[in-house]
Image 1 (tube, one colour):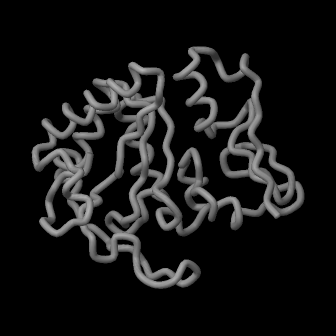
Image 2 (cartoon, rainbow, N blue to C red):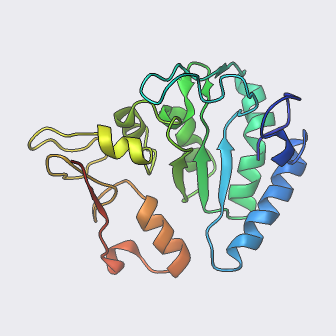
Length: 215
């Protein structure tokens, strides 16, 4: 769903062109087709993921440098970069949104509460948000506070730790050294959202749990 803006971008060959309307319509139709077969589609990479240089930063896993910081005006962001995602999510009902590696105007997209709030409040979208692999989230706690539904993949579950009796930023009552990605009364919606969309039942009625223990 990325707009093709940089000719040497590594993912350019997978993009759907330079036109936000066409990218949104084609990407949305692909997502709708996937979901018509009983699967969940995830639109990526949210958002302004156009560069190959410093796309994920440089260096080792533990000493990764910052990713590229893409500077975009508010109007350009909404009219060019966000529009394909809006069409796919709102018009075609794509269920998931994957955050990109890059920073946008100084903040990592998966840790930016204002950016992650746009689909939910401005577009009235009720899907779930996940990060790109490993380097998209540099601060799992910031991602959790920004309401990223799955606050990173392996790295988050190794890093996020709560003190005895501490309650998570999204209102989950989580025991020490455990990160539950949902709770019946939680505002974190990745697992509930998946089951509600796929099975058509309410999460409270389903009553499943998926706790991730931290060593």
